[in-house]
Image (cartoon, rainbow, N blue to C red; front, side):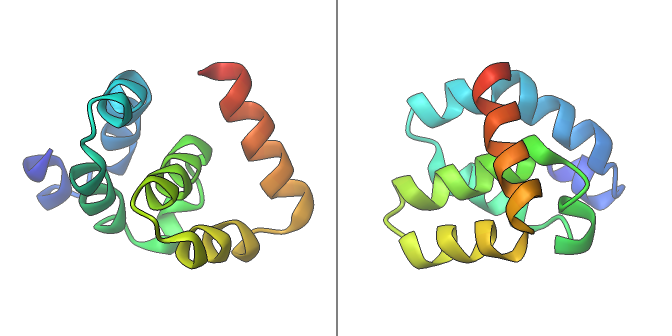
Length: 91
């Protein structure tokens, strides 16, 4: 993943997270997921709904409820609801 971050290949990072993110959460790899996602600039991250959803969920597992709330709040209500609905349907 680090080589993708260095190459700024955010699309590929998102694809990998979509593929293995749920399993990583179940395996307790919260810090790793949090690190990888937070290395993606926030303005770019917002273009990847699952990445935003996963970051919010990881922050919940890490006990960072204020951070989780801030992630969701930064999005408009309709976009946030759409992301959450999309993520739950997809995964």
